[in-house]
Structures are given as C-alpha cells and as structure tokens.
Image 1 (cartoon, rainbow over the protein chains, first blue to last red):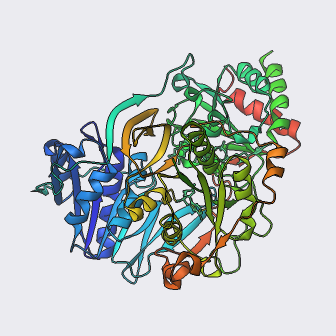
Image 2 (spheres, chains in turn red, orange; image 1 turned 135 degrees about the horizontal axis):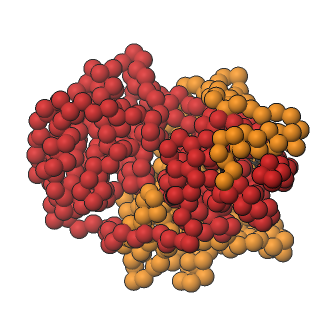
Image 3 (cartoon, each protein chain N blue to C red; image 1 turned 120 degrees about the horizontal axis):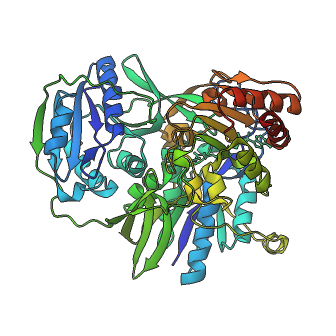
Length: 325
Length: 263
Ligand SMILES: Cc1cc2nc3c(=O)[nH]c(=O)nc-3n(C[C@H](O)[C@H](O)[C@H](O)COP(=O)(O)OP(=O)(O)OC[C@H]3O[C@@H](n4cnc5c(N)ncnc54)[C@H](O)[C@@H]3O)c2cc1C
Ligand SMILES: Nc1ncnc2c1ncn2[C@@H]1O[C@H](COP(=O)(O)O)[C@@H](O)[C@H]1O
C-alpha cells in the first residue's frame, strides 16, 4: 500500500469523534503497511478543522465547497473520484456513522474499491491488510481479506479505536480546488429535523428497565411497568420495540435513540447490538436476562441470567417488593 | 410508479445457538429457521403503500436459493405484483458486491422508478447494498430513510442521523432508497391473502437469463473474502447467576438492592 487516507466526518462545522477514531486506526494501518497517511477534509469552510487535523496528522488535504456543508454522499463521491485518481494502491478509512453508512458503499463502487464496513480490528499479513468485523446478528467474528485489491475502503466500529491526542504533528495543509464546484446535485439536503421529545426523559434516569424484542409480539406491558415501578426506575427499550409501537421513540436507547447514563441498567430480552449498547454511557451496572447464553449483551453486563424473562420478571418483582418492606 | 424491492432471505440467528462449520468460513445453517430480513419487511410494506397511493407496479426480487420462494410468496400476499428469484449455483459464495451486480443485471432489464432495500441485513451486517446499487445504476441513493413522499418526479424523505436528529432531503427520481425500520407498520397477512397467491409462478433467473458471466459472480466475482469465523468468548465479564428462575430472580434482586438498583 502506498497511501492510507482518513476521511474526516463533520457536522455543523465541527469534526465528529468518528474522525479522530479514524485517525487512530489510520495511523496504525499506515505504520503497518509502510504507507503515507493523509487526512482528507471536504467541508464548506476548512480553515479551523484543517488546523485541528494538522495537529494530529502530517498531511491534510483540504477541499472547500459549499456542496460539502453536510456529509453529502453524492458530493463527496463526485469529488473523491478525481481526487484519488492515480493514488493507488490505497486504503481509505472512515467512521461507521449514519452519515458514512450513506456514503461508503456507493463510494467504494465509484472508486472501484473493495469495501468492508464496521470493522473493529486490522492486521497485516504479507503486506496485505485484513479486517475483523461481525456477522450473524453480531454474534460471530469474521476475519476478511481483500484479495489483491489496489483500492480498499473500510469503515470503523464506533468506539473500537479510542483516540489519544498527540497534538504534535505540525502537519501541512494542502488546499485543493473543488473538482465539482457549481455542480447540481440530484440529492439535496433541505434541513435538520429533531425527533419529538416526550413526557419521560430517560437520559437523566438512574434506574432503567430496558425491554428488547425478547418480550415477544404480544407482551404484557403492565408486568414490565410494574417491575420498573417497584425498582423506582423508568422503562426504556431497544429499537424494535419502538418499531412495533409498543413504546414511543423517546424511550429508545441507542445511537439513533437516546444516550442514557444510569446507575443500573436491567436489559430484558435485548441482544446487545452495538447500536444499542452505544447509547449506554457512564459505565453503569448492567444486568441482563436473555435466553441465549451467547447474546452479546453478556459481554458488557456485569451480571447475567440465562432464562426466559417471563419467568424471571414476576419473581424478581415479588422479591424486590419483599426486600423493600 | 414502478418499484423494485430487494428482499433478503436470512437465517434467524438472533436467538439460535450458532456453530461454525468445519472449514471455519461459515456457520452451520441446516438447522436454522430462515425468514425475510427484518428491515426488508418495512421495505415491501413501503412499496405497497406507495403503490396504493400512486399506482404502478411492485416487483420483488431476491438473490437466494429456492427455499426463499416462501419469502417472495409472502411478499405477493403483502401486495407485490410479481416476484423473481435470482439463483444459479455459480452465485454461491457471492459477497455484497457480487450480489449487487446480480441485482443490477435484473433491474437494468426492466422499467422502474424506485428501488427499495432494507438498510442492513442480519446475516452479513453489511449495510452496503443500497449504496452499491445506486452507484452501479448511476442514480442517487440514501440509507436509513423514513417519511417518504413523492411529488412531481421528486422524492422527499428524512434520513436518520444519530441521537434523534434527521436530515430532511429531496432527491430526483429514479433513485435507490434503503428504508429504516419503523417507517411504517407492516400489515398483517391473512390466510386468505396467502392462499390467493399460492399458485402464482415465481420464475428463477440464472446466469444465462441475466446475461452475466461466471467470472462476475460467486467467489470469483467477489472483492471481499471470509478467511476465518470465530466465536467471541461467551459472557466475558458477566457473572452468570444460575439456579431455578425464582432462585436466580431472588439473587438478582439482592444484588440490585446492594448496588442501588432499587430506588
Ligand atoms: C444505523 C442503525 C442505528 C440503530 N440504532 C439503534 C438504536 O438506537 N437502538 C437500538 O436498540 N437498536 C438500534 N439499531 C438496531 C440494532 O442493530 C439491533 O437490531 C437492535 O438493537 C436489536 O434489538 P433487540 O436486542 O431488542 O432484538 P434482537 O437482536 O432480536 O434480540 C432479542 C433478544 O431477546 C432474546 N430473547 C428472546 N426471547 C426471550 C425470552 N423469552 N426471554 C429472554 N430473552 C429472550 C434473544 O435471545 C435475543 O438475544 C440500529 C441499527 C442501525 C443499522
Ligand atoms: N441477496 C440479496 N437479495 C436481495 N436483496 C438483498 C440481498 N442482499 C442484500 N439485499 C438488500 O440489501 C439490504 C442491505 O443488505 P446488506 O448490505 O447485506 O446489509 C437488505 O435489507 C436487502 O434489502
């Protein structure tokens, strides 16, 4: 590999954490592949973000265009194709945020590159990179290779490459004119919209009883409400529970829902997908009831019970009421 | 508006005990139930709702072996007008990129305004098909889409970002949209609806019918190869509470009390 590129992600003129995690992964990959590391910043106004990147990365390529106001998959792809022409062999690293999920797959096709999404580890064998990601409901790890690909795009699992600032790179910023200036896009950003807020704010709750798909299609919601009440906590849930209209959206814990930072988190019938667990902050005591001993939730929980939650919940509530007397 | 919906047939792995096979490159699937990918249930529903509003035709298509006919038939019962299975022994071992090529060979051969997919499949957790199809077809695409509405050859929708934030967007047709779960309420399918489509023919198209060369599909046509599957260690970190349900629940209650989990 000649080049490792890190694509910076930003929102509302600020670099996002995913950018710094990509810098972390990019640094190691560049070292292991003997390649040169370059950060690519496409933004409406690059000055301050490029300066921040240059503190951590020796080379920054900055391209300014109003079309890069948001991470627009169409604008980014159209610009990156000419910018990366003749730069192969290369590997391009970026976060796996919701904005990048929109960009990376189409970009990989446009660049004629191999793609692996949501990678959480890399290794290099015989000068070739391999990536580890997860398959089958995030329950199995898969080590993947890229054949003899001369162009590779990878996206990174959030949190897998923690960033430690060095602040000492004193890198150079190369400004390049936008190759797509004045182009008309077929996909246009109109405005930001926020999900509605509700009467419960789970983000400030200390005790959370969280429900997942394991509660079944016709759950006895009163049973769970009653348990939450006995514990003095609130009900929260995973995404499928909102999708089924069993609880409103503002009860959803996760990357696309609400970030919570309770003291205690009781997960009932939740598998523990990273998009869910990613919404649990502040290292609370996590307890999980799941009938599958291999459920990923047990990897982040401190205590677990492998059982049918319908058998545990009533007994648990009874015992709690007894202990409270 | 003519809509093509890409439907994936996936093993139900979320609750099953998974075992890696001898070669170490896949799991044993023979004993697993299969079903339509969860996100795709929302995609077919959205297509049928758009058709009910705007007219046109809904075509469903899946790259999968014969068993997946069951899923496509369910889509017909949900309101799709026609269904195609794309399969050939040569497709075995295709990665997402090769599957995208197969789907594109099908899509290009017919008229359409909109292609719908789910955002993510439960088996490869790739989240890549929609964007790849858009790029190969030369049309715009978007993932994690909800609140879709169509007017004057333009489509508007919300794209999900993190933390309850959405991008409200507008896009020219034709286009590819990958839907977010929860954007609609998939309908209940009655037994009558299922019976009505029981004898509808679902053609299978292979290499020849799709005009594909063997080198473009399967392992040969793939860009990413699985080298090795491994199971992450079980319950790493978690202390498992055993015993009968009442005993385990009682122990859990005591731990909760001790650790401040009872307010
Ligand atoms: C871009 C993106 C954003 C996302 N954002 C979020 C988000 O914000 N929040 C979120 O939660 N998800 C989010 N997801 C979805 C996420 O990937 C998972 O699909 C989801 O979290 C799974 O929810 P679950 O654990 O309830 O269901 P499943 O994964 O289906 O798990 C159900 C669990 O219940 C167990 N179970 C079944 N029956 C019983 C029983 N009787 N007793 C005990 N256990 C039982 C099963 O063993 C299984 O482990 C997002 C996905 C994407 C792609
Ligand atoms: N083999 C396939 N046949 C039909 N559609 C597919 C196939 N693979 C993926 N898709 C579609 O692409 C979406 C995303 O899948 P993936 O990129 O595999 O995560 C799925 O929800 C399906 O709509």
